Amino acid sequence: MPYLAPELQNLSLSDIAELAQHRKLPPVEQWNPEQSSNSKMQILSDGKWFHDGGEIKRASMIRAFSSLLRKDKDGYWLITPYEKQSIIVDDAPFIAVELKCEGSGKDRNIFVRNNVDDIIVIGPQNSIIMGSSPKGDSIPYIEVRNGLMAKCSRSVTYDLYEIALKEKPNDAGEIGLWSGGHFFGLNSA
Image (cartoon, rainbow, N blue to C red; front, top):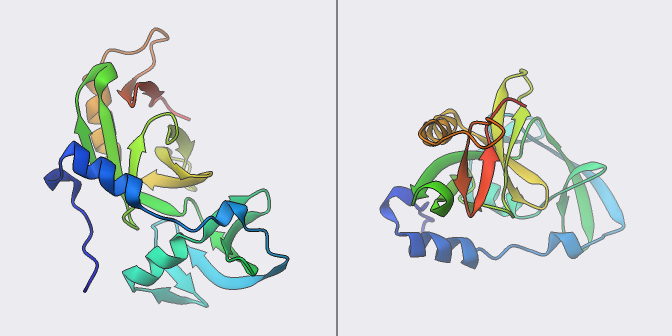
């Protein structure tokens, strides 16, 4: 049966929370293989995956590889219990492609789907961090897991700023928004 990506706009808050909770990922943070090599893989800044110069187009393969990603002080790796392979990541390994918002102000919850169909609940564990793209543009990034980030697509960036512009700035005059009980500033990096 083919995999069907969830469309957040058609799901209830409880459906989204259940999807986010049930995504089982390999425990790559617990694996420390001694053997290492080069995967000959690269993730471009637009989220496309390549192997040895050829684009990987099968979404299921990209989802599988993305579940093995880990970032540490030496860079990005694809990790198994027996081997780790280096992978080049031009910007962020993921792209935030869809957003759903429920509630308002301090009671708001924002959910994001990335390009490999991870559902991220923005809050203390998954912060919005302002950064600079490789071109020098100020852009929001969302922490997906363990230091792996999703660069916000143009549409998700616009959605975040649309929400923020309807809010009052915080006490420091910073433009931003609330999600998961935390305020996230959207001023330039």
